[in-house]
Length: 81
Image (cartoon, rainbow, N blue to C red; front, top):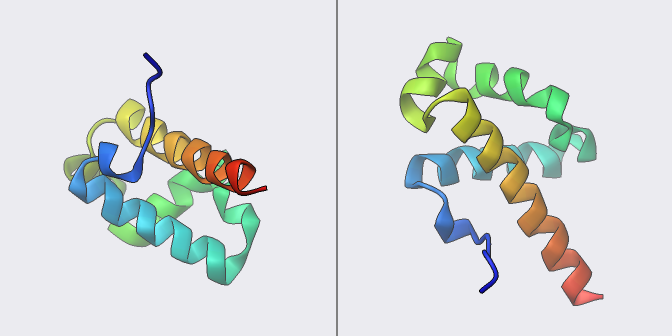
């Protein structure tokens, strides 16, 4: 059985953050999906950073959601081609 990653597999608050990230991607470009942008995006949305952890979970969970969303995004693009 394959472990599928879908948008619904993220917690509701994580989904809201990921929607924010995708909005930044649309307006600012693909660089917003770079792993180095995670902390600045969290600060932009949740300043201060500890508010992000309170909303989204610990750092590992947040990074997993950020990376998982990208896997889902790129897998969807590959399947369309």
